[in-house]
Amino acid sequence: MTKNETETRKHIPLNKLNTVAKKQWIKCTIWSIIYILFIVWVGNFWWLFLLPFIFDLFITKYIPYDWWKKYKTTNKTLYTICSWVDAIVFALIAVYFINLYLFQNYQIPTSSLEKSLLVGDFLFVSKASYGPRIPNTPLSFPLVQHTFPNWLGGGKSYIEKPHWDYKRLKGFDSIERNDIVVFNFPAGDTVATLQQNPDYYTLCYYNGRQIVTTNKNVFGDIVYRPVDRRENYVKRCVAIAGDSLQIINNQIYVNGQPQEKIEGIQYNYFVQTDGTFLNSHFLESLNISVDDRQKINGYALQKEVEYMGLNPELPIYHFPLTAESKNKLAQNRHIIKIITEPEWFGGEVFPLGGNTQWTRDNFGPIYIPKKGATIALTINELPIYERIIRNYEENELTIQDSTIYINGEIADTYTFKMDYYWMMGDNRHKSSDSRYWGYVPEDHIVGRPVFIWLSLNKDKTLFNGKIRWKRFFKNAEY
Image (cartoon, rainbow, N blue to C red; front, side, top):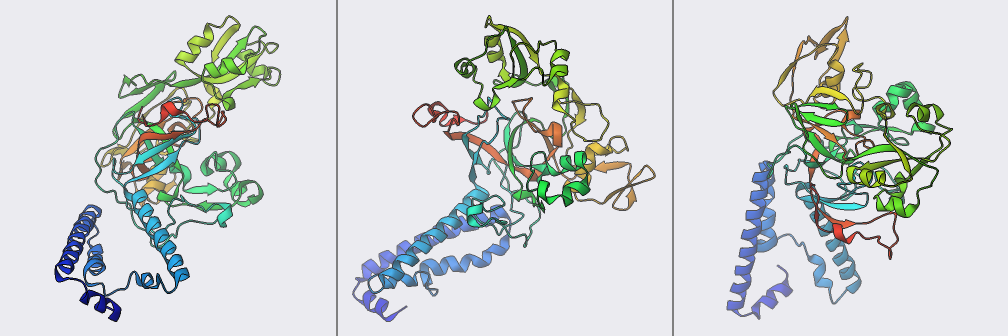
């Protein structure tokens, strides 16, 4: 305590000093209890060694945390600078812990979940719902996922060491079928910086690993990202650990039962008119975004068009439709044909090179692995589980003379170490999801979207419907 502080205290009545001391003790007690409960929740009791700092902050005050406040009248410049630094540091620390353990904001960037969630929706995502994860990379800059923007110089926004193993704190709930879930992109561990969609493994499959890793002008640098620094995705969980999933003619079946009806599910269609061109007002009434309003050159795709029974000489459109929009479109007298987009438009699906003959619209059956479950492992089925065994659960996997070796030992069975989930978009023909890159491990789960707190329509102007007021505070789970 300084001489000035001592002199000041001499002039404060004893009853007032006791009141101040009592308030400090109450504050110290409350914050200590909160801190201890937090430590119990996290399960890292080494943090108890920081408890004396809380006591010193409120009671003993040996460490001059607010030394700069004494310059309020003598050096206003120093006082102002330190006040700003103090406020910014406190805000960053608060944001760091809130984002890490409680919630974060997330913006819908693509149309894969339309019409359930729209491009431009801003979500309040609860991390406490499924239990927040202890970060793999605890030393990181708040509000930046993995890379600083160019105007801040670019580069990684986190430090790789120390690296903590996966641990999830207790949450309020568990993932159920048809929940909308935010998660880290499972195939985002290795990234070609100039071509991030499709993912690195798909690029290697179609172009060859040597070309992808050496042709930096096209693919950019190849970087590795820890689990918690991979891109955030949001999809609907259609199957949970232990389920069996199959898709037959676009209908999802889980454990042999059809998926319950979900409002807003979309599929792509080819639409032919009698020569009439569809105007923007009509397409807007069908809730088709500007980006999705695609007019096809019938002669450029003549073989595909004729295969579908369409006339290349008449206008052809290609866009996603909900069941409601499709019915409304069918009532238009200028519409001749509405053809569901053929399944071969979806390209090759998971597992790439697995020779399953599966397609986007007819897929499986496939088992969703459950922690502790043991499966028979064969060469034919290995492509389905290879990434789980090698990448997600970090085993050494080799094949010699058609024999599978895991960690140097012959393996004809495998026991899973984590639960897995199957994620899909509601915009079924315009969604990069588990049908293309497979399972989502439990350690990639980020949280549950709770509600929409802002929604901006990129097709509108500020004074012409830019803000979707009706979506404010809408439940984000449906």
